[in-house]
Length: 382
Ligand code: PLP
Image (cartoon, rainbow, N blue to C red; front, side):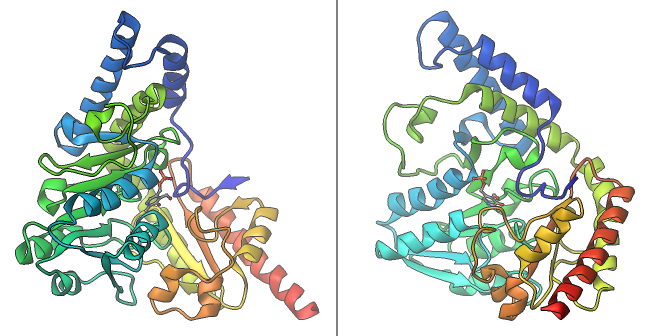
């Protein structure tokens, strides 16, 4: 079996697994406790915060640990909306966002906030001008993802940040960086980002832990109340093993980014070229996209059927993003990019990572050819 679902969850580094085990065994104390063991656990969190901050070129006190990027996105969006509603109740996002951003905005609409959802070009790219046009005096927040989790499109977040601040310098800019970190350069200062979400398990760290960068001076209305953890921004006893292991994964994946992308790009390009040669397919990714995501549609064939056939042939792929893959509806992302319903129902996402080789890609290509052949025979026989 070959695993092609790194964008959903990447296998952890050996060092991450070892760190988790070691910290669980040795540093089980509550980091808020005042005794020696508690203080030691607290120091491990502080050190992890420094490591993550260094990886993002920000200050340690600007990093908040959460339970995952879903929570980071919820906290960024709802926390900003509730905190700054006195300034205005208008929010801008895009039609391409991950459900944790999209649904947070839909929920805010139900609470009386006005949300503008910007549509992409057919390539899946958001035009910064379309964002700038939508920014108003009462726009408190704009949220745009760096890399789309379904098709891998890279958004011009630097140009978007500049465009927002030129119209309204007080509008906060949130970037969902989950699929970009470890694959593309990150420059929060240059982008003008006030908030940035990161998910360690996409970069070979543990699950159930996330990061949110909150620029100094930005206040968020806490969604979880309780103790004064994370400087009062997120209550709850910290997951010390996961936080320490996350810092390791964030540092290592940041350091290995250029080398990893150097290996993934030729594999990704080979796959794109191969898929474009199959007349039944519509290829939804391109060479300008992130190096680890390749997405295609087989219009008229449900994505799940193709994915199941590929699994029978030894290839584990996904139909779209993991959080949406159990939905029977057409992909919101593909519809927004102008694809028709059969194409939006027939999506397959292949996501690449460290372990993949040319031989793996060759095996995948063979499996895809065999799957199409088998499915056509099955269809013909029905
Ligand atoms: N944002 C994007 C773009 C994602 O791809 C994901 C996960 O797939 C998330 C947010 C949510 O991350 P987590 O799994 O850490 O909650």
